[in-house]
Image (cartoon, rainbow, N blue to C red; front, side, top):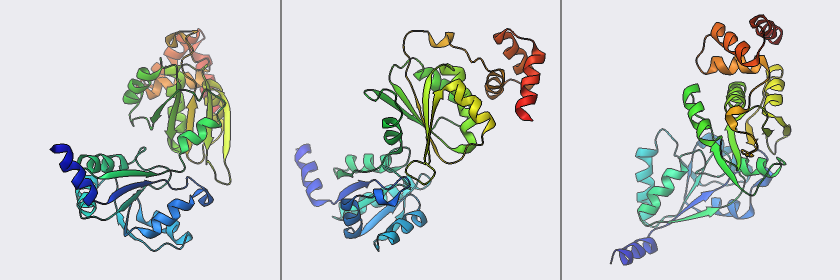
Length: 290
């Protein structure tokens, strides 16, 4: 009986479409997505101003409503009611697939619980786009996304995944990249290969490849710009993760400070781990800051 009731409700309700939007280049929008965005009565957008620019580009005039992380618990039920009345709804994020690191996943869960059909309008995804261009293993991977904000929580997450053999996918903003890199090198091991993609599909798209330690050193001197996808190889099993160490005193010292040590204590610990004088660590920091 319950299954029959769910089927009846699904038949009467509209469909929730999760629609991918470009991650940079507007030409990556699919024909189907453009058509569907123009046919539905309502679009739920993470940022209506941003989505309005996309719709204007394709001469689409569908009504927009705001649905984001800060209103999902109040707005979500309202959108479900709209769907139950028989209307179709498209949910979009600012870029890429809704439901990946955004509240679209919450709306999908609410819809499924209500017996509403949920259907994808596939398209761009930053994580997979970077993965296929990374040169690392693509057969098995774990999507981690954005790490927590605090160094302690970041380390906890990285400790959980450091033994995973599959390729790891992270997202990061430019102003947090250096600190995140230090954590990656410290916990996962500086010798791991990685590929960092920034500004994917945009004019200044760039991939930079190397070990985590090499990338740490590069970005200590170069200012990170644009949004980043970090692809890091999985644990190879050839060497225990805890035995891998960061060799660069600047990278190691910064990582220790990120974990909560004072600068003085971080220099002392870095010198101890690397087997060098504390003055050498101090001089390396001075040179990096100059």
